[in-house]
Each structure stands twice: as structure tokens, then as C-alpha cells.
Amino acid sequence: MRGSRVVAGLVLAYLLLPVAVVVGLSFNAPSNRLSYDFDRFTLANWADPCGPAGLCASVLRSAQIGLLATVLATVLGTLLAFGLTRHRFRGRGPLNALVFLPMATPEVVLGSSLLALFTAGAVPLGFWTVVIAHVMFCVSFVVVVVKARLAGMDPRLEEAAADLYASPWHTFRTVTLPLAMPGIVAGALLAFSLSFDDFIVSNFNAGTMTTFPMFVWGSAQRGIPPQVNVVGTAMFAVAVLAVVITTFRRRAR
Amino acid sequence: MSDLVLQGLTKRFGEFTAVDALDLTVPAGSFFALLGPSGCGKTTTLRMAAGLEEPTAGRILLGDRDITGLRPHQRPVNTVFQSYALFPHLDVAGNVAFGLRRRGVRDHAAEVARMLELVQLDGLGRRRPAQLSGGQQQRVALARALVNRPQVLLLDEPLGALDLTLTRRMQVELKRIQTEVGITFVHVTHDQEEAMTMADTVAVMNAGRIEQLGRPAELYEFPQTPFVANFLGQSNLLAAEVVERGAGYVAVRAYDNRYSVPAGRCRAAGPAAYLGVRPEKVHLAEAAAQVPAGHDSVAGVVTDWSYVGVGNRYLVRAPWGTELAVFSPNTGEGYYPPLGGEVVVHWDPAHAFLLDREPGAGDATTPVAPEPTGVPA
Figure 1 (cartoon, rainbow over the protein chains, first blue to last red):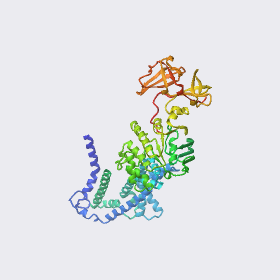
Figure 2: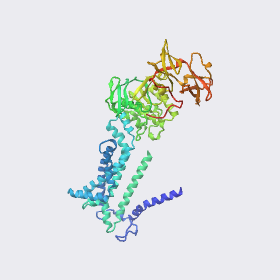
Figure 3: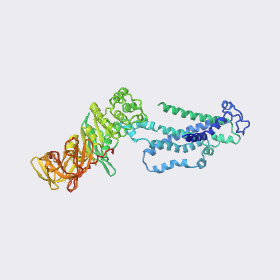
Figure 4: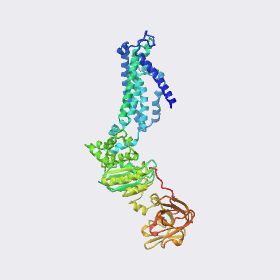
């Protein structure tokens, strides 16, 4: 009993240590640009998170790309998941396998081949090429998550709804969609986090535009401004808050 | 209220014919049981009535109205599913109100409350299905269907997932509710006792066809076919030849013995017949001298005996090798022979019956083992 607790504690520490460093460094006033030592406590970084030129613009851009890619990938992925679980058609087997492909392909390959495609098609690189690229690999994750949810659903529930006077549209709206929703939400969250922190594919296809991961990468050459840690800590706080809220809401039911 | 009429109803899945040109009329307001082994087509029949399965051929009518082409949500018919199929994301009240909401019934709260009271679940409206016991879930499924006052309520093995005590209680309760609301119930089951306990009329199905239809007592006392004789309870069926059709009786010969049966209990048209008698209608005697006058008899040896509380079950091997099933009720009187004892099996000819037999078919007796249970269709 005690042994397993010790192991659990160690694993948790291993997982959270990097986060603790980020949180700590967000309150650091480094003595020089290339110093990663904790020199002096300060609230100045939190008071002025947009201090470094281009930081907040890149965060905003990543958020916009993330939201757009999430919405598009979730809609497309959910439709695809429904099609793959509910209908039998020619080519269903190969399609099932193809959906996995973007997940299995190394991102470097994905990024470079997309770049080749956009260049060959004379598509100007920038915001939209990154959105298109992100939707492409996010769709696969949404399909996998939503499909798992649909596969576990009792088909009798939809028959019961039809038996209780619900038209096909009503059945979808009042039974199928609410039951599939946890899977769809999980797929959307996954898509957003994948898009938001993607560096490799974005770096290939962004042209002169800079996303947040690209900003961090770029500034790492010259010394990462402590405000990056402020953004990281804030994002971590938002995620923790979301988990706490959903846990409490579930318990209240 | 109108009758549910099935005309030439057929369902084929590829090569397999699940339901074979079924003609059936379920009278309005009756409690009707479709009884049969798994795979006999009873659930497919039910699903076609609900609109969840499309018939290959035939028609389904409610009174004079043809509902064959209607989608499930357009039919005034509701179903209690075997697995209940309660909506897990809605609470009990939400489940029960589902059909009322879809039909735009105002003030459904009062209706829902009344229905929950009927199935004795008052006060549980805010619970989720997952927080209920199996018996309670079953009653929610019943309430959810009944609250719509359908013309016909279809029940697909509704008690299959409950334990024995609960099943017995729900049988009584279902019957009470049906009497109270007066809606036509069509109940699909593989459990003969369940069918006989609840239904006014039982249709025994086998291989996509109805073998016999009637009141439970009619079916049990005078079965139409060997299948019915052995699916509804057990029977000793001896291969016999009709030798004489006299005034008021039919005489047969089986294994060099002559037996007689009242003419009114003969369904055999040709010479090949089964002489049938139920295990509880036969008695055991120590010697031929103790057989009452007028009884028919077979001598044999007790090869198996089991004590089941309400009585004793015996297997008695006849001279030609067939084992006859005998059930002696535990009345405290009568003769209870030991294993290996020589006995005479005898019965009142009025309790025997004659069925058609395929020429060449041998004896058909059911083993004394407990009847098959727990295999849902």
C-alpha cells in the first residue's frame, strides 16, 4: 500500500516538475537574457505579459488558428465518424485505414510534403495554409475519438426513440447527439491542443507569419523572455480550471 | 381500440426465412403471448409490428388501417425492449416524458407522475437509469411505453434479465397493469410458464410459423403438434398405429399393446399417430394387479429418480428401451418406487391424446432434466 503511494508520488512529481519550473520562472527577473537561473522574485512579468515585441500577437494568432482548425476538424471528423460507423459502403475498410495515416506519418514528412504541395499549387503561405494543414491532421484524432464513442452506443436507444414518436431528425438531436457529445468535446479539445502547440508543420507552412510555438523557438536563440512562462502558466491554469469545473459539475449531478 | 392483424407476414434475411407467411389476429384489449424457442421468429415478428424491421412480404393492419408502410415514429404502437433501452442521459421522468414531448402533449408532468405511480416508482423521477435496480429499470421502460396509451404495447422478453423472484412478481404486476389500462399487450417470450401465467391467448411459434394458438389450458391439455406437446411442458409421445376408429374412441397399437383414446382427443388423420400423455397424468403401481380398471399401462424399470420437493420425477424404461417421464406429486400418498424397481406406469385413457406422426418417426419423449431456460431469442 505505502509502496504504491510512493511510486504514485514519484510519477506525479516527474509529470509536474517541468510545470513547476515554468510557474517558478514566470516570477523570475533574470539577471541577463541568457540566464535561466532564478535570480530575483518579481511580479513585473505578470504585470506586462505583452512586453516582448510580437509575443501577444503570436499567442492571439495561435488561438485563432486553433479555434478555426478545431471547429472545422470537429465538424468534418464527426461527420466522417458517423459515416464510418453507421453506413456500409464500398471502400469503407480502406477509408478506415487511411484516416489513421496522418497520425502515423512523421510530422516532418507531413510538413514538408504539404509545403511542396502548396508551393506547387502557388498557394501563398501564411495564416490559411497553416489552418488547412492543422485541420488535416486534427481530423484523424477527432474521427478516432468520436468513432470510439459511437461504437459503444446501444443501437436500441435510437430504435427506442423512433418507437417513441421521434422522427429521424429528432432522434439525432435528442438522443444520438447528446450521447455522442462527450466524444465530440473530447475530440475538439484534443484538436485544439494539437493545433495550438504544433511547431513542425506550422514552421514549414507559415511563410512569414509567426505562431506562438514558432515565437518561442525563435526567441530561444536569443534568450526566452520570462513572459513566455507567464503565458505557459496561464494556459496551465485554464486547463486545471476546466478540469476542476467539469469534475464538480459531474459530482453535482 | 382495434385488433392487430398480420396477413401473410414474411421476413427473409438472405436465404434464411425468419417469419414465414404469418397470419395472425390479436384481439383488441387482449394479453397475447408469442411463445417459442430462440430463433423461431417471434422477435422479428414483434419488430415488424413496431416498424423497426421491414417485412419482405405481407401486411400489418390496426383494425382497418394498413400500417405496413409507416415508419416506427408514425405508428400508434410502443415497445418495451429486452434490454430496456432507457436513455442514459435523461432522468426517469425525462425518459417517461419522451414520447409525450414528441407528440406535443402539454402538461406532461402530471401524466408522468400518474404513470410512475402506476408502476410504483413514485418519487424516483429525478434518478438516472443507472441508479436504479434491474426491476426498477424494467418498470421505467414499461411506464415510458404505456404513458403514450398506444393501441398495442409490444413487450420483447421484458422479464428476461430479472432474477426468478422478481420475474414472478413482475408477471403478476404486468397482468394487473394490463387489466387496469386495457391496452392490447403482445408479449414475446421463450418461457412457457411466463406465457401461461399472463396471457389470455398463447401462440406457439416454431421455425417462422405458428404451430398452435389458443388459451393456455387448451394448448396444454390438448396440444396440436409434437412440437407444442414438448415445448409447452413435456409429453410422453409413443409411436403408434391407429387400428380402429370406434364410436367415441380411437384404438391404437403400440409395441404390441392396445391403447384407446377418446375420439374428441384425437388429432391423427392417418394411421401413423403419436399416443401422448403428460408426465403428471401417469401414475406408478407396484404390480399390474394394482392398476385401476379401465386404465392403460406400460410395465418398466425405474432408471432415474429425482426429488424436487413438490414431487418426484422418475424415468421408467419401457421394454422397448424408451424412457417415459413420470411426475408423482408429493401428496404423501401413492407409491414411490426405488431406483431399479419394477413398476407399472398407468393412466386414465381420457387424459391421453393422439397426434399426427410422420410415418417412420419413433417415440418422442422429453428428458426429465429441467426445461431449458435463460436463452433469449
